[in-house]
Length: 112
Image (cartoon, rainbow, N blue to C red; front, side):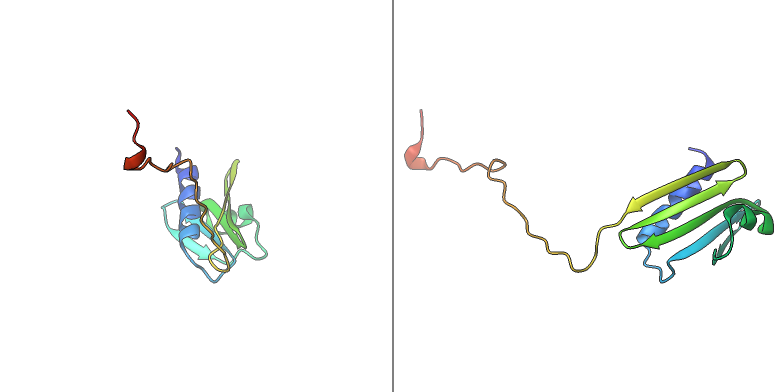
């Protein structure tokens, strides 16, 4: 996997693992590998790249039920999305599956 897609995947993984208060932020990766986190409001990804001389730029959006990462690097772009599991207010009721553990015959009903 190339650097651009690997960076996008790592940013998505980090956003999924975190519990950030901000719903949207930009990650600007410069040509030397330095990283800046910015508020992307009012910016397009190409404009951020031009302003900061970035190698690539990613916009992370957290929403109820998922995280979306949009990436831009020159002529390339990508979108990665992943749904998240709800953390609160979920009612879980495990079901029993009798065919997974069928009852065993008792000793008085043994067959030969």
